[in-house]
Image 1 (cartoon, rainbow, N blue to C red):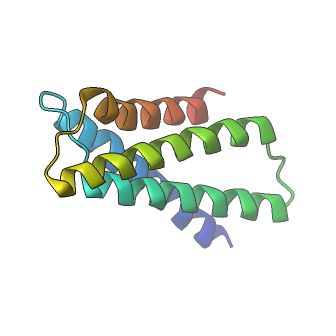
Image 2: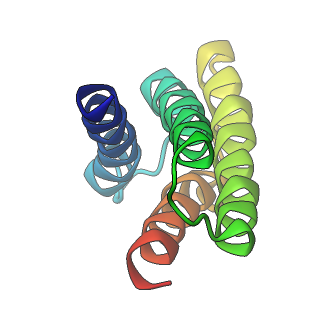
Length: 115
């Protein structure tokens, strides 16, 4: 089970890195890529699986923190979905939407590290 947990944590971090890394890369001309949407789903699913694994074990789970992180992850996923749909249609993605994806993901990472 340790290997599975480690693999899920790794994939969770990779998803967050893709979202924030793409956001920083496109900072001058804000955009939302389909990769950010897929990475948000990766982070969301692996985060939920990690919570499930920790709930089954002996670990204490801070449900308030998990609730906040879940809401932030859903905001990232929805914003990334809307942004990547606009990108695929050839429409302009607003600066606010592009920054909402990356900024909220970064905030979610801060909650994980600081709380």
